[in-house]
Image 1: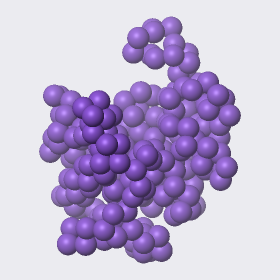
Image 2: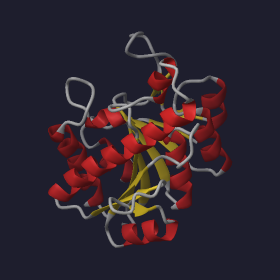
Image 3: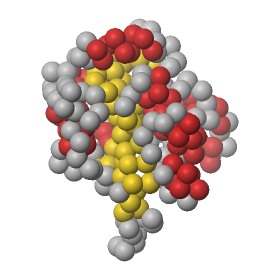
Length: 237
């Protein structure tokens, strides 16, 4: 463990990471792929906590476009993150990783309530902890939940695992000449609105000196290479 650059990580996943080729819902095969990635990092001795979004199941913006109250739409999103958390826990247990789900909104028959010291103890015992339910409050994204939980558990880094291998000056899917950043100051990420994470999450990390690394989850051994000290993706610090 002493050879690792990051000993305790907060892994922020999008809900889409669990979706299959159709782009929505929960695909068991894809969930197992994500679990295998997490297991490869866990086997290095890294303590892992996960926050996962819900874009594969529900987006609050869709509800608002239909005239839904913002708070109601966000509460539905929180519940959707719990569904994803349970699916990911099942996949992790299937590959042999003991896992606990803790939720910001209490659903005691299904998952533990979020208790900071218990979460840390789970990780110290070698369990993966998944934080569901966002922050428990409307108007906050799962990016903000990832930043908040990362600081609460004293994570060494917040890893935003996406399908892009870092932060670019423009959308690399649309602009083949887009330039990738190796490093990026927090203030530049905020002022340039590069969509690293939402502004609340970046501000939280900046104020509390929690580095963010944006990388491609599907690039071979990307997370494992990062925690061992290799330069992977874009670091925002």
